[in-house]
Length: 323
Ligand SMILES: [Zn+2]
Image (cartoon, helix red, strand yellow):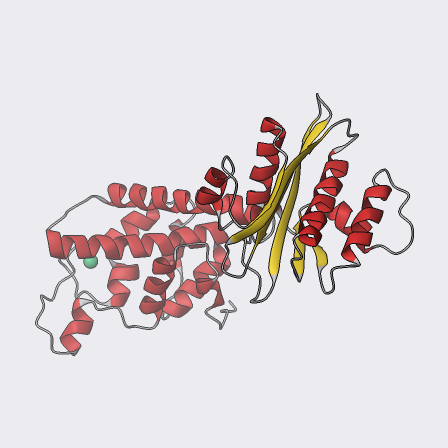
C-alpha cells in the first residue's frame, strides 16, 4: 500500500479546528497522556482510565484500547480501520484515509477527539459514559458542523464574502433594485459608505411600468450616479449584483438593449466622475442596498440624502451597517 506522505488529509478534513489540532497532536506524539506525563516526571496514575488493563499511551488511547474500538466500531464504515498492519499513528491515519470515504475519515477524526474528550471528563469529573453515548454525541456534533457549512460552501458553490469597506479615500456605493411582477413596479436602493463603513449618502426611489427586473437594476444604477454627481462625491466604486448591467456599462459602442437609454445616461454621468467605476458584487455583500430597495418598493419612498440618514430609513441602517 502507498502511504500518503503529507499531513494534508488531516488539515483538509471537514471537521472543527479543535479536532484537527487533537489528531495532529496524536500524530506528532505530543498528547499529554499518562505515559507522556510520566516521561516528564509528572506524578500520575499508570493505567488507562477506560480499560484499566494497559498503560495509557497515545497509541493505546487512540487505537488499541477496547473503548476506542467500541466507539469507532459503531460507525458503519469504520470497522476495517483496526484491521490494518502495525504502523505509526501517522501512517495508520494515512492508510485509513485510503480505505474509507472522506466523510468517514472526518468522522474517525471526530471520534478519536471524542474519546479523548471523554477521557478528560472521566479524569477530571469522574464522568462515566458508554461507548454508545460517546458515539452518538460525536455524530450529532459532526452532523451539526456539516449542516452549518452547507449554505456557505456547497449550496452557493463558492466562497461567501461579506460586505467590506473600501480603501481609505474611496467611497463604496452599493446598488440594488426590487421588482414586483404583478404591479410591474420597482424599488431602487443606493447606499454610499466610506472606509469606516459609515453611511455618508444614499437614495431610494421607485419606478412604474417597467418591463423586467434588469430595467429596475439599471434605473437603480442611474440613480446612484446622480446622487454621486449631485453631491460631488468621489472617487466611487459602484457595486451592483446585476452582472448584465455591469457588462452593458463596460461594453463599447451603442447599447440597443431594452435598457440602452438608461445605460447611455449612466455612461454620460460616469464621464464626469474621474476614477469611478462599476463592478459586480454577489448578493450576500449587497444586503443593505437590497433592504433599501425593498423598503422603497413597499413604502413608495423617494428620497436622496447626504449626511444624516432621513427618519424612516435610519432603522434599516442601524441593524445592517456592515453588510
Ligand atoms: Zn484502555
